[in-house]
Image 1 (spheres, rainbow, N blue to C red):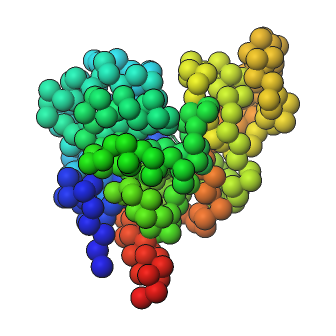
Image 2 (image 1 turned 45 degrees about the vertical axis):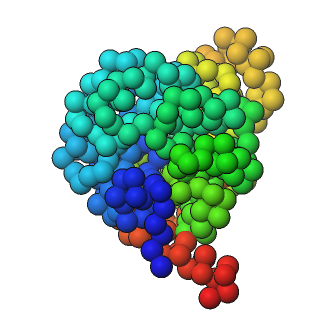
Amino acid sequence: MALHTAFTEMFGLRHPVALAPMGGSAGGALASAVSAAGGLGLLGGGNGDADWLARELPLAAGGPRPWGVGFQSWAVGVDTVSRSLEYRPDAVLLSFGDPAPLAGPARAAGTRLIIQVTTLAEARQAIELGADVIVAQGTEAGGHGARRGWSTLAFVPVVADLAAPVPVLAAGGIADGRGLAAALALGASGALIGTRFLATAEALIDRAEQQAIIDAGGEDTERDGVLDIARGSRWPREYTARTLRHPFHDAWRDREDALAASTEAKADYRRGVASGELPRQPVWASQAIGLITGPRPAAGLVADIAAQAEDALARALGR
Ligand SMILES: Cc1cc2nc3c(=O)[nH]c(=O)nc-3n(C[C@H](O)[C@H](O)[C@H](O)COP(=O)(O)O)c2cc1C
């Protein structure tokens, strides 16, 4: 039983799996490995770092098709998206913030537009903008997402109903084939997977951070705005981030306004990072990290997730 869906059909994929465009971590090698394995590799263009894109876009573009590139809508301008389109990606994914000003160039270039949504209002806007694929992201996800978001289990079927016939991918807390099977059962046409791919040979991630993800469990993650405020990030406050727990969580949990007002606390954070007492940056990670047992090449992972999903669905049907 191969898993054929509207999403695999649209892109000619062997498996209904997309690599999440993890800013800075999903580079050209990882995107290419996922695409070569029959999934959709999406480069993590993040907030549009020009040097990073100049290095990684040619790698993805020189690899197998289809591939795409993702951006954080709140952080990039039309120029960044337009420049990336010169590499002729098969898809552009926009997340977090207003995608409307950025959708035009992708459309004009004939590139598929994927919009990741975290609330119903964002889902309705993505439908109005004519997204080719909508990613419904639940709060189990690693990295950023809605402060007042939904769990993946509750969000995906609602967005699938709303968006039909537009294919929907589920994102957030999917780290193996059982999660992919669940996504399909919820009415999604596939899964967009992030954190699981951080534990691969191809991910652009510090090896100590990778090991910390492998060693930790879901209870070691937290979702809030504490670390963004402490590090002086420009991320809009309506988006929080799920990360591995950090000493600043213990000091400032549920006191984000007080942290925002404390120049001393932010200076402490900077000093802690400079001296090596605090991690260099937040370790963004999913609630599903307990399912990640070790680093491995991305290609085998895509095939295994698909095979495990087929098995899980067959078992659920008692076959
Ligand atoms: C390290 C990391 C960085 C991320 N950066 C981005 C990003 O730049 N743009 C984006 O659309 N999503 C980003 N995400 C979120 C993913 O697109 C996706 O929603 C999430 O990884 C799915 O949940 P999972 O981690 O449980 O698989 C990031 C996720 C992680 C773990």
